[in-house]
Amino acid sequence: MAGMQAIDSARYLPSNTKAATDAAVTPIAAGMKGSMILKIAGQVRELIAQGRVVANFTVGDFRPEQFHVPSELSAGIRRSLDAGATNYPPADGVPELKAAIARLVERSWGMKIDPSWVCVGSGARPPIYSSWQLFVEPGDRTVSFLPMWNVGYYAHLFESDHIFVPTSADTDFFPTVEQARQAMRGARLVVINTPLNPTGTMIDPKVLEGIARALVEENEGRERPCMLLFDQVYWAITSGDRAHANPCVLVPECTPYVVHVDAISKWMCATGLRVGWAVLPPYLQGRMKALIGHMGAWAPRPEQLAAAALIDDEAALSSWFDELNQQVTARLERLYTGISRLRDDGLAVDAIAPQGGIYLSFRVNLVGRGFDSNEAIRTWLLDTAGVAVVPFQAFDMVEDSGWFRMSVGAVGLDDIDGALARLESALRSLG
Ligand SMILES: Cc1ncc(COP(=O)(O)O)c(C=O)c1O
Image 1 (tube, rainbow, N blue to C red):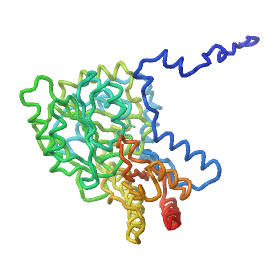
Image 2 (image 1 turned 180 degrees about the vertical axis):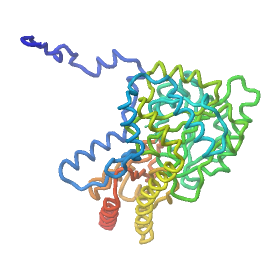
Image 3 (image 1 turned 90 degrees about the vertical axis):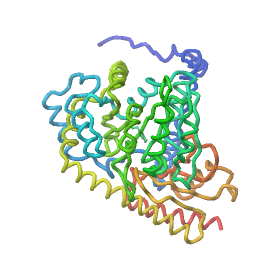
């Protein structure tokens, strides 16, 4: 307002920020760890600002210059917006999207469901958060397998007695059936993600079937069941021969215990548009709807309507998947072939052939050979080769095994070629 003297509000803030924060917030909020990936992303930005050439393999996202959303999606959003779709959507999603998702599930996996099984949210995270809220009380046992995206944060938020089951490259970083069976004993929630972030590997359907059977057996006679949170947000992005498998199709008896989580975030390259959903038995759907409604974590109406139209257009969706997979596979294969060539030349690197998602498991086998940790290797790769990667420690793995995640969502083939050349000379300079 004209003539008004503005107060310098910052003068009234506490001088000891940390003490003030700790006093004001709950111990859970105070104890939330910052994201290692975001810290690394900050370093990459700084180097690029200094004029350094850096290939950024760190972000689990798409750079729009490299991966645009389907044109049908952006046109559909514009149309819905122009038509006035700007009010609150229903808390569990617009009927058009719920029905389209039910049809997609039947078409893709042969699982016959109706729209009452679907609960839409703003991306995959609200359904994930709600699943923890639905099933987990402080001290309850929860289970996941190492490495896996973000589970540690949810276990912290819900104060669960969390078991991280270690896995290895020999099993593509998935558990054996026996490992899962043991860990599920007495647990309330087990989390499986396939295709897996960070490894770019997919679970063997036989292993998934064994785990689904073990889940059914575990729940026989139990008062409060163990639930499976099945995170399949990358299911439509596959590079190898392995098909995406669904536990409720492999072992239909496990259906009462499974919450599927999905989103357009990854397979429509639309991370910023925030449309995700859970497919869960109707006896639970109403409870998730209530949680999402009170969070206000619904997806915007125009995005929901446009996503519904594209999901229902089988021909357009299938040609979009072809285009996306061709783009992702070209990048992953270029990286994998390049790293394999360096390994065959005797350099201390390795990778797992891409299977699904936008990631490659990349190993730099130098711990104990001039480097004492993954972190030391990571900073050396960044400083010397301009290759930015994320160590598996960002996905709760503890040991310094030399494994890193490389994401291809923000790079083109030229970036990859440049990175491989710089990587080769950095490795050769070690002698
Ligand atoms: C395995 C996995 N699940 C869920 C998500 C979250 O997806 P959204 O952005 O839709 O919340 C991510 C994002 O990176 C992911 O990698």
